[in-house]
Image (cartoon, helix red, strand yellow):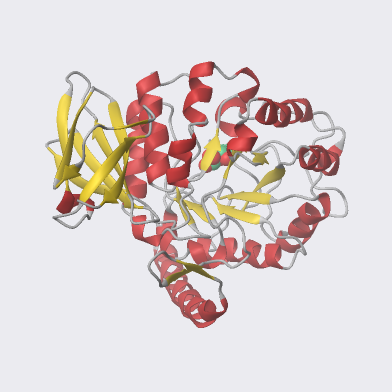
Length: 421
Ligand code: GLA
């Protein structure tokens, strides 16, 4: 929901703004490069290291949790959030890694207080956010909150944080909030690099480590600068719970694969698994693509009524392990056969590869080949292939390529491990 999304650069003034923004992005990049040396480095197997981006020490692997928006939209209250925290624990999802319980839009009162503070909506969150954070923490989970880099949030039901960044960041920290999703509605003419940067500094000064999730929809090529400010950045508009909507988001996100690193992730939006718009095999594809692309795994369904099928997808430990691999390399599309057949691949730790064979076609099964040069394996190398949806290691070993038959709107996801010949 983004009622006031404007065309980004409609006028001469906007062109000047763009110029300013580019200059400020360049300045930011220069600054970032300057203090990069002080950032922690992630050791890699075989030596070397990749510098962590925004150095608040949070989420060296993509964040995992739940968010209220995709299922509940504005229909949220403290009972729903408490029940969700309970359900994350009871279903085993918390143990599988889903730790953040994130409020999205509509948690706050319509206006700030006379003193200028944002407060919880007294009707829907009568106990306040601090009490909710205490409850969520008592379950071993973390609480996330939401605001916008504008005067109002996208629903227009609550204030945004533009001009109140320090006050709001300190307020969130005082409540025990662990995560901020920061949206882009009701902005003024100031470029994203400036408005999102201000909140980044405010969070840094808030006295509490707060995961910072930028939600500016991929404007201003955010993957190129998001890592200077935050832990993840949306690369797309809102996900739509359909096969083509889901693929559209992951395709856009794919263009930026090289910018993802431990501590800073491309975000093609939250999961729709379990919300009913796609078939089982399509949700398997959705989850597999998000896993291999190192996307945040933020559940968007009602986990208090989750089906066995949905739970089976969301809690597949082998697929989650691909997403949470400590190297943090975003897998990407490496080969296309015609319009419908694709191979995606990504490096994993211990010299392994994640390989996904995707059939986007609606009618026919097809045989898809992952050839070693395409997936980045040296020609003579022999591997074992683990099918992480069947939880089976394929019989035999593979040298040069791996071929499998994939049904319509389906995928196969493998982990390939080199073995001595
Ligand atoms: C925007 C965001 C969504 C959601 C809504 C809330 O559209 O992109 O993810 O937060 O606002 O209004």
